[in-house]
Image 1 (cartoon, one colour):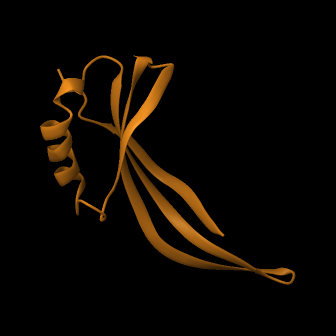
Image 2 (image 1 turned 45 degrees about the horizontal axis):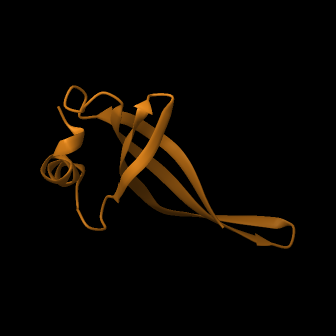
Length: 93
């Protein structure tokens, strides 16, 4: 079982997005937990970084428009932000 521990979160592109649009960065520390009898073995896994675009009618009701995982399609948060600026202009000011 993979256990994800959210260790950092922050809003990105503040001042660049339209009203009720949030670009959120999250970093997780991951553990692979394996139960063996009464023992629990934990092995550290690579941390995971994500950038999400959330949008909606109000900050109380946001839906996920896109989730990027750093290291999959893009190797850095900056590359992801460049993609958002290029492909999600309709969500920016």
